[in-house]
Image (cartoon, rainbow, N blue to C red; front, side, top):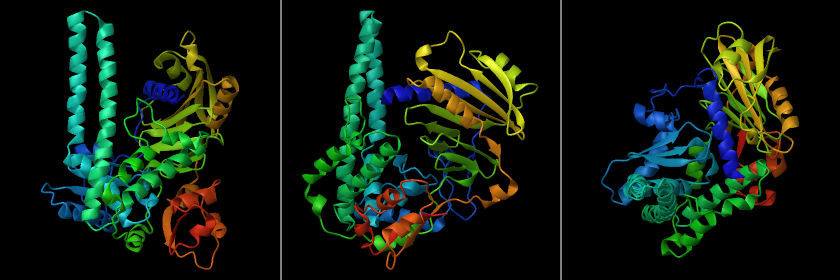
Length: 470
């Protein structure tokens, strides 16, 4: 089902290319207002903008430089916080990146050091370059096999086997990066079990994301032959045989929590905000509401919504001028040409709705295109449902597109990012803390996950806890 979902997402991305050229909700800035050094443009285009907090940037870079010094690494490395609410870390060139989302999920400086150390291990071993060379070798071997045998089938078989081997190779590189990262953090005086704690934190977060999507949480612990990463339990098991994994050391939890206190955990305002199943954009002054079972994923190119039945919606806006009727434009420009194109009105503005063209692949289910004029822009939804209830669900998705509306000046001005707050739980209960979380559902579970606590009783025993506040 996962690969089926990926194919449907790819279809929506393709369909978005058939609409007016989408513009980024918030283009990355090459400079920041408060003195954070700008990333090279080619790096920023690949990873996104850095977070505009000199103090937090300096803190994270300081932890990374401590690892570099204690490991006696000679090359220059930079450690940067990216302005993204998704929990992630990766390395490009001599840069190691962690996102705001990852920082929010971690409990202490030792876990941060583990994340930085893992990515540093990839750079030290030049894993990306090794994978690129190995991949090129696979493709060259496949082409040669096809030429020598005169059979494309043989070439595809060689490519298939080679790419499976490459995925296994990538998994081995991940385990090697864990081992190197563990060595780096222990040398720097951090607790060795911080690497396993980091993996467990990410595992819990993945389980919660799967639960939100109606999937079984245990699937995060399973990997297939096509996986490029080992499963979390596999990574933790590999660490158990290493003496450094139980080495004593510091966690520096209080210092870490002070550093992340007040950090935004939301999308940058220029990209709009996801609020449960709603999307609101304070700068473009627009909003819409997805069905209740949908999860919304915001990015600079648009918003992807995924339902529990794997129905999909993609929303974006474009600055392109569409003269004349939107229904006529949809008939003349959108390929393959939709059927049943209906001019309509949404939010008091001109709009048009079209269905998937006749004769196209019916296995892809029901699809609708919705276009709406909004100020000087054209906003559009691409909607798709391929489940057994596809006819009813596509009607529900069209109704969701019809919730599109323009925000008033007062509504737009009132929108602010959510922030992480660190406080003492003394004198309050876990439920009172959960009630302060600005979410419509799973408040207690979100609170416990944010603090790596198994129970409300364990949460209130912590000296400091993290909560999310508007």
